[in-house]
Length: 386
Image 1 (cartoon, helix red, strand yellow):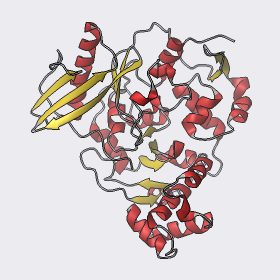
Image 2 (image 1 turned 90 degrees about the vertical axis):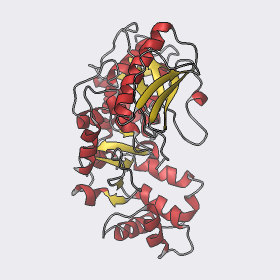
Image 3 (image 1 turned 60 degrees about the horizontal axis):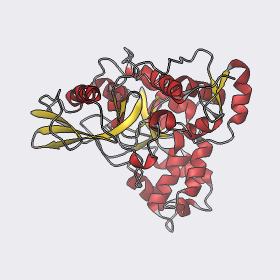
Image 4 (image 1 turned 60 degrees about the vertical axis):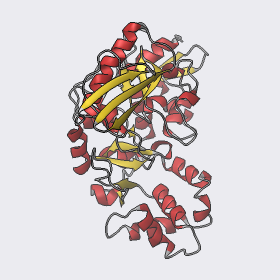
C-alpha cells in the first residue's frame, strides 16, 4: 500500500478544492463539486467562490439564491451550509442522525425539547411555517403557544434540527443582508426530500473533493459515525494508501494526485472554509500550526491565507471612512517573494470585496502598506454565526 507524504496530500487537497488554479466553472457546479460550503455567516461563500473561480461575480451567487437553485440549510456537522437544491434534498436526510445528536448535546437548548415527541415537534413546526417563512423568534413564539412551559428559542432550535429548514433570501445575498427567516425545504423548493438517499454516493463525492481520506476524516466532515461499513462496501472500487503515520486512506480511482513539489499559488480563504474543517488530521493544510491560531473559543474559524498550499496566516478587512485595508497577519516571517505574492493576491481580493472604496491598502503584519497595494476598501467579513 503506497505511502503519501504530507505535501502530496496537501497538493491533492488543493487541487480538488479548485485552489491550485482558478477554474472556469458556473458557481452552482462549483458548490456541487465541493459538496456544499460552510456558511455560518452570509458572506464567506462569496469569497470562497471568488478564490476558486475565474471571473466569479457577486450577482452570480445572489441570483442562484433568489432563484432557489442553491440554499442555506443546517447540514454537515449541524452547521449552516450553502448547497445546491438537489444536495439539500439528498444530503439532509442522510445527516439527520448527527442533527439528532447535536440536539441532545446542545447545552443551551437541549432541555427545551427534552421529553417531547420529535414527531409532535416536526408537525408543530410545519404547521407554524405553513403560511410562510418565519424568523427564529416568530417560530419559537408559535411553538411556545403550545408548550408554554418550554423555552421558545430552544423549541425553535429543536425544529431547525428536526425539519429541513432553509434560510430564505435576502439572507445570504451580498450587500443586502437581512434577518434569518426559515421556510421548509419542501415548500421552498417545491419538492420533497429524496426518498432513498445514498450514503455511498455522499462518501464518494467527499473523496472526489477532499480525498484521499481516512474513515475518521469522512466522519469529521459529515458529523456522522460508523461510516467504516460504507467505505468497506466501496473498497472494491477504490484505491488505498497510507499516510506517514500508517493510517489507511481511501480514494476514488481517478482522483488527481499532483506531485508534492507542484507550485501552489497564494490563496485567501474565507472564515469557516471547509478545507480547514473536513479532516480529522488537518496537518495536510495546517502543517504544524496549532488549531488555536485559527479556531476561536466562540466558534469563529478565522479567514486564512495559504502560501505554498499551507495556512501561513490570517486576514481581515478593515473599513473606515471610505478606505479599506486588508490586514494580513503571518504566523512566521514571509520571504520577499512570498510577501509580494500575498500583496498582489490581496489587492485582487480587495477589488472584489471592497469595490466601492475610495482607497485600498494591503498591510502585512504591522508594517507599512505592502508593495502591490492599490486604491480600494472593504466589507465586514465577520457577521454573526447563524
